[in-house]
Image 1 (cartoon, rainbow, N blue to C red):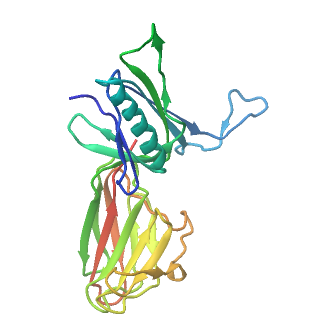
Image 2 (image 1 turned 180 degrees about the horizontal axis):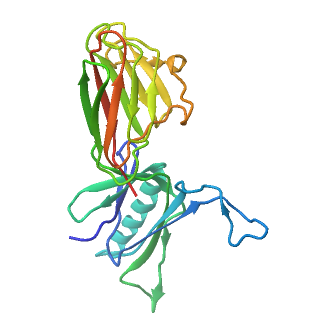
Image 3 (image 1 turned 45 degrees about the vertical axis):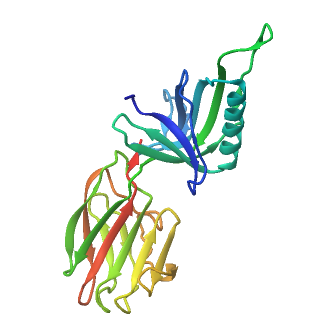
Length: 280
């Protein structure tokens, strides 16, 4: 059992996976915050243009250091070859941490530099350990390894219910799916997070029980399906553009979120939230 540590790196398809050696293991995580400051005449320090808002995260540098300890020189050479080839071929992939309870979190990242290997010759012999340094650039928050899916069947308007975000950061990368249960189950739908004011609203109405509307904030799209989600077409033209938030955005705050659904006609729709909890 150990405190949470950086365990491995995988490509997006999980067909390439490299587990970091643990000999003399060290993990260092370092990243800055983007804070726009303006010097002002006669003012100490500087003016913070963000006010009380959260600062913007810069890319984070994740560094793993350790020592390769293999039973033979051939095994050490094979390990070095595997380390270099798999980390380079993986491209933009997923860094995983392993927690003391066995759970994992992951983040988007990519190798930032060639793996650094140190080989020393002393009196004609190779040393018993081979130090290495691996550097990654992390490009997202940490996400829970299990997808959270919350489905609520709505038959009256308005209806308010609760969706829980188990992470400790706002969940901004998510999908909202509106799935009709009757041919006229969706009319002018509006989903509002009463906890933070975020709104998803569209003028799209259902045409059959196979109709589905989907907002995907990670891809920045709103789509419509007529075959129960087997295929989608772009539906941005039907989106009601919000006036106080970024277009095609929605987020769930840490903990319980009060969600309100409103719609016209005879409401009969499943509202589905899908997301990986976000962690700092």
